[in-house]
Image (cartoon, rainbow, N blue to C red; front, side):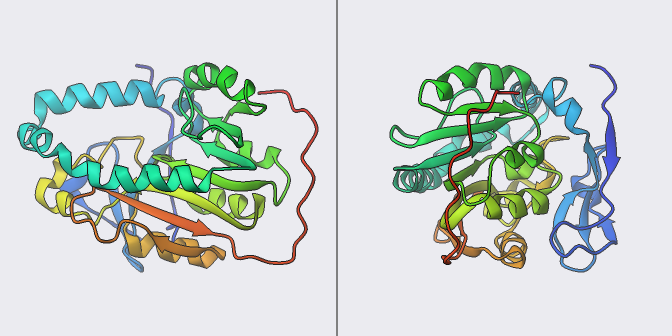
Length: 280
C-alpha cells in the first residue's frame, strides 16, 4: 500500500479545547488513541486525509483486512465470535427505527456503501467517500429519483439547500469522520424543522470494550477516528442544538450506540427542491 497521508487533530471535537493524553494500551503505532484532558472524549489524535479514504483506505478494503487480522492475531476472537448473538439486540432496534423514520419525503444516507438502507417510499440521496462503493450505489439511488455523490460528507452535504431533508441516516459513519462537529452542524441546517438523524456508532462505554480491551471490535485503525460514549455524543449534539434520544440504553450487550438526533420544530419555511444536479 502507498504511504498514507495523515494529519494531527489539534482540538477536541466535543469541547473544542486543546490538550489530550495518549491512551497507550489502545494505541497502535502510528495512530495514537487519546483522551481529551477536559471532557474525556476519546479519539484518534492523528487521522488519514480524506483522499486516502477514497481508494487506499476505502471501507470495503479496510473491513476485509481487519477481519483477516483479527483471525490471525486476536486471542479472544473465538470468544467474540461465539457471543456475536449479542449484536442482534441492537440490530432489531436499529432496523425498526430506520423503517419508521424513513417512510416519506427526502432521506439522505451518509456513508451509504454500495447500496441503501432506505426503504421504498422516500426519495433517497447518498454520500459515499469510497470511489468503488459510490459507483456501485449510484444507479440504485437514481432509479428511485435520487443520486449519490462521491466525496467527503462535509462537502457533499453542502450540495443541498437548507431544510431539505426529512431525515438523515448516519449508520456506521460518524466513527469514521474526522470532523464530526462540522458534519453535524451542516446536517442540522439541511434537516427540516422537526427532522431527525438516525445514528449508529460504536459505544466506547460498552461492556464488551471493558471485557475485550485492545481487541474490542470497535477499534479499527486508522479509519475509526472517534470513540463516542453516550455522554460525549450527547454533549456534542446538544451543543449544536439537537435534541438527543438514546434508543438502546437498556441493552447491556450491544457494542453500538443507537441514537436519534432531532432538530427542534420551528416556523422556518421549507425550501423548494434544487434543480437536477449532476453526480460528482
